Image (cartoon, rainbow, N blue to C red; front, side, top):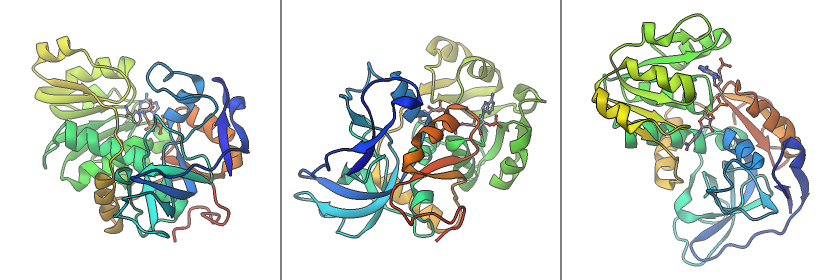
Length: 320
Ligand SMILES: NC(=O)c1ccc[n+]([C@@H]2O[C@H](COP(=O)([O-])OP(=O)(O)OC[C@H]3O[C@@H](n4cnc5c(N)ncnc54)[C@H](OP(=O)(O)O)[C@@H]3O)[C@@H](O)[C@H]2O)c1
């Protein structure tokens, strides 16, 4: 099969479009013909070697931990899926990824893909939407009527977090630059904040939940907007336990986990029209380098996806 692999850590030039062995499903696993792979910042972070002390990848390995495709073969004991099912997944990021014609995924990491989305749009959902879901619902236990501040509301995770928080009945503040203010409004943000013109702490006050997608100064300044009993969830940098205790708030670092059952819930919300991925660009798999450069800019609007199987998502922006 064809795949994008890396043989060493480095810049986008280490991404090699080449032949790789087709994997075989073991018991409890499913072989999926990948039609599209989503691109996330973790892809270039792994490529650069930032995760090498945490995840035991062995060279050469395949990047990309977001996919939509079709079930090709079932391992022993798989009962919830059948051949030809259209599925999507955040697969285990410690194993080979989805920038490839085929991937082996555990049954527990799969769900049927949302019906209204073609594969490249569906592939843009799992990692970012699960991150938003697990941050807001599992970790922060978001309740209707609560006030939520989402940093980078126009980004991959942020645009799902905004929509999921609104779906749950929250009052939502979100930050982005001037060019993304219209998008924030369209997504349903109650109080969009232009971080190039305004200080978020002047607008967002008495917040129950902060979703920190940026760390550093943004995280440091976010403590002051939380009300007592509030929660700061960071995706990027462990928040200080000491500071949280002193302020009477809770703080957590989230690491998104594969979860097929939650993906099935997310698919239902997408099917109902209450959640939609924003797709910035769909590129062919062979242009993974370009996709990484765009992601690494830190200013992607919504998501980037890679078309793996020809004929999928060639009509830019069109749903089918
Ligand atoms: N821990 C986990 O499990 C986990 C899971 C997913 C993601 N992450 C991490 O979380 C971070 C966000 O991921 P992502 O996929 O959402 O990234 P992304 O899509 O690359 O985020 C890009 C967005 O960030 C906005 N942005 C940039 N600087 C900003 C600022 N100072 N204030 C407000 N918004 C700003 C940009 O808007 P403008 O262009 O308008 O500035 C852009 O829309 C990444 O570091 C990623 O690795 C962690």
